[in-house]
Length: 519
Image (cartoon, rainbow, N blue to C red):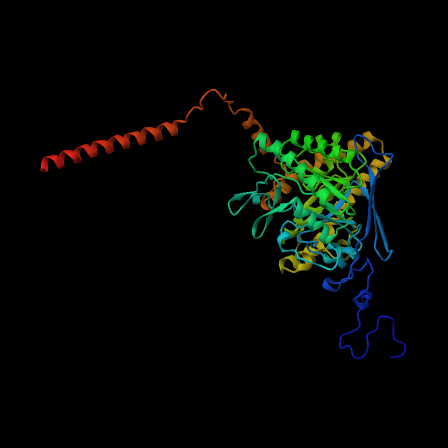
């Protein structure tokens, strides 16, 4: 066929010519920008991976501001490099998939795109293939994104603190994962084996994270910190040395988080090349609303990620102690039919708020964008009435458009915060953030809380930890040389048994008298 274009199909091909140039790539193409589908993937390991974090000159005690640089070199000498400014976002995933988005959709339509994907495996860890010829990045069909291999899914309902009526209680040498089959034990050796098998760009080391609503005593909370640090040591000694690790700082109470932070910092200072290196810190304590007490104890030159800080207001409150936050809320809101609007500079209902797109009276004939000044692909090409129609018909495209919009709103908020840190005096930036927090707390948080509660997510659960600490403090101490006082129930039960025994003896005497009388 003369004059055929570079993307034309042969006459024998019954399918029409595609407008997508990626469709004609050969199936054995090793390009890192377009991973090969599943089993036919060309292995891209062992790769050389480097993680570097540099604090900016404008960083201060009030605001962390830096740049995370990631670089991966494959055996074919192909180098993939990216940088991510902090404060910023890590992309949330569930079951190794980005909810409501295909890899192509995310790469082409979401701007700015987050280059790091948190691949949480909690729900599917027991179902991962026993073997695979390539890496988790290709298995998950990531394009140019970098993978952070993790276990805990922070967006799973906190009400699932019990599975099959069994509490999620971690053991002396394992952590529990919540799967659709129930609780699964993951030891340090098993996690290190998973890291070696799937060779992610980076791997998060799990810890004994307690969920909101759990009842944990003082000694159990302290023991969890010790066990988490031992788990970290075991993974470091067994995991591949060329996979950068992110150590988890977890705790049920504030004092536990501080102790865990000190333990991780000691290991960072003394780490050597004979173990897998700690290249990042994960602060994960869903029972606490304030994670900043851990900050003074952590190495300043390592990036920090907090997957349990889900809401925009919680993220903004931690700008001074955390670098990266999860994009989880974008997907929670999208799945429930909500559009999220965020603006640091414009404090009114049009710029900051949550819209429920299933409200027929408001949006069935609203031909304006989801947000008037939004520059996302969804707002540039579609309107609220179209999104309402898609959701009303249960069309998947509706959730896709909402996800594109919500991700853009979160990214824009952080871009505004970074610009203020870079250009404005510290007092001006603090005043902006305080004003935004005050407006958001008053006008948006009530609706946000209702949405979180309907999804079983209770982020601000410090009361549960405080209650446990208070209860533990009031437990009476019993000296070893004194007998433990018996409860009233025990004494009542004892008296009942003695009465029954007495009645039995009397019955035996009467029976013996009747026998003697008959004789």
